[in-house]
Length: 80
Image 1 (cartoon, rainbow, N blue to C red):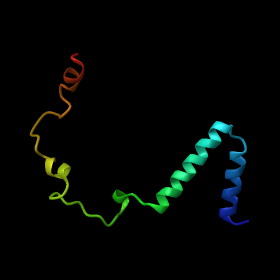
Image 2: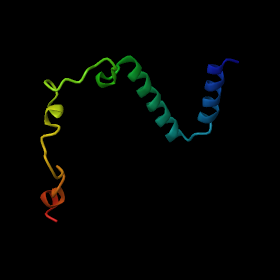
Image 3: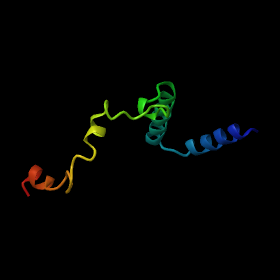
Image 4: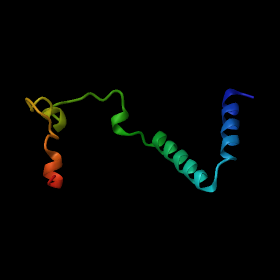
């Protein structure tokens, strides 16, 4: 038995112990993983360079001299 077959066998043994609800979660997760392989997300590409001219977040970094952006956010949102 190869290492891949052993891993699949272990996975099947664990799957057999799951409830119907958990089986649906496993199926959904497996489909999600397969979709990531077929359609890789742009930000996961290792060859992409950050460009501050094109990225508004990079343009904003360093513009606040002191304090935090979240300072007073509770009062603003909730009036607390």
